[in-house]
Figure 1 (tube, rainbow, N blue to C red):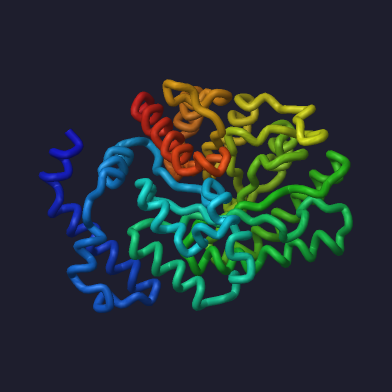
Figure 2 (cartoon, helix red, strand yellow):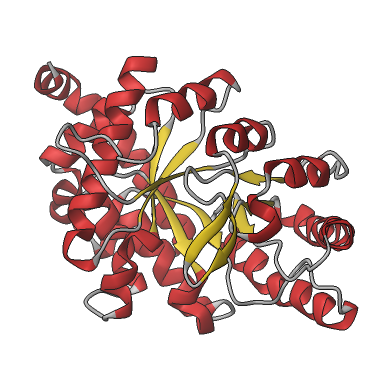
Length: 332
């Protein structure tokens, strides 16, 4: 059935993709003449993964790949950040979710960012967001340190805008007292939001440990911010509030947490670690969570974020993708 769709709609797809390609490459500064029609036809060649992507496009959401899914390959320098677009496309994804630590010194490097845009345009994929780590704690009680952390995020707002992303993901870390952390987090989000408004960039908070993995605390924070460019990036798996010796000793109910965070969601992260023989995530009920995603009316990108061991990184990405497609079909 997919093959029939492909054959009967190839010319239409070519026309649409050609226009889309020209538009994207023009924005990124990549001249069409440098590729030529032969190269362009190669870009349009439909592989098995592309056919899967066509099928996935019938779902109520779109599929993106979180760069962290390839963190072992990136840390081991088997691939680089510039390879990410081609790698994601080879798996059939249409969106890219970058992690800033893999191009940490390039936020203001226009040549490098242009190359990232060119790579994405060449593969026909969309830059979706940048996940920001290591730039300062936004719930920090030391006001001087916190303001410096906020300022450190400005360059990533500008980079995200240049790349055509819709958001950056930030962390609400550094707080010791719940009420004080709530107060400083709200102020930090408002300041970042004000800076990002002119660039049409959303400031998103992921449940990423500490108070941010507490759904009740996050609900109180987001009930006190009103800017439309502030939201959440609910992650299926990050609900550990407190760890001790690398073991979670205080975990929030993931399904309650997802339900609470999805109210404010502008992105969604499908975390995965282990799969059973039937292709289901062993510890996370994907159907239950994706049903929640659909019920809130979310139709944007769902990012695959596999966190397994190095030897199964690519397989884990495919398993997560396939599980999302399976569940998406059941819900669509």
